[in-house]
Length: 114
Image 1 (tube, helix red, strand yellow):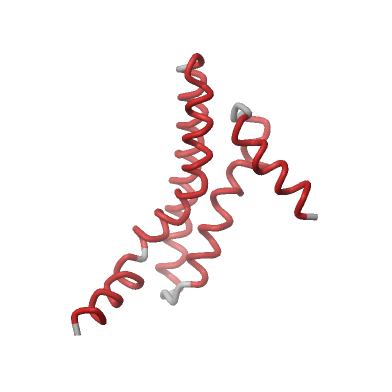
Image 2 (cartoon, rainbow, N blue to C red):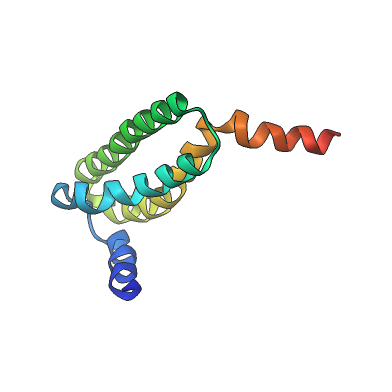
């Protein structure tokens, strides 16, 4: 099962982001790891829901901006594809880190200062 999924994943980094596959491939690719990270973090239910909703909106905006930039700067499309390939891997993690900074990072800093 991994081979077709992995092949599609890595092949997508060199193909223009098209709106037809946006909701089926690109959006879940960013949002599923973000949801997993948020749900694995010990947070209050209300805060978890708020983070997930804001994260979904930011993920949609991120993907739409990439599509827009690829259309606007068509001659630099290949460069945007490789930047997006890196961004779609890093974006969910960075988004989670920003939203949970006080729960994840601050306790680690306090332990190192003791």
